[in-house]
Length: 163
Ligand code: FES
Image (tube, rainbow, N blue to C red):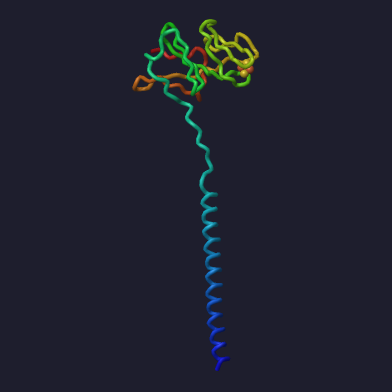
């Protein structure tokens, strides 16, 4: 009698063990499938880095008095308003090794603090070691009267914005 009970208990244990093993293997298959779906989704989605726009608004014309040079530190760009009233913008990034140059109003030059390069108001090199002039960026005015600089468009020194 006891042997019969032991056999039934063992049979119950086997079913329990089988159920447990089936559950484990079902869970493993589910995890493997979910992992495959996630990895496939990552593989198929584009891996793109978004860079900030090269265009920025520089404010209203009235913010810039004639015959002024204003450094936009965030954008590393000089906004130049000539005494005749027109505008142009030049990079403040030194063409030698990339330091940010400053406007020296008392000397009337743009000077790099790192190795002493000097540029005139138009961004032309007047003293090295900078190998090239500071690039000039196109400036436009939007429908709200905001000045807009596009650092993605380098233009010649003849390009100005008349206002
Ligand atoms: S980085 Fe400007 S002179 Fe060297």
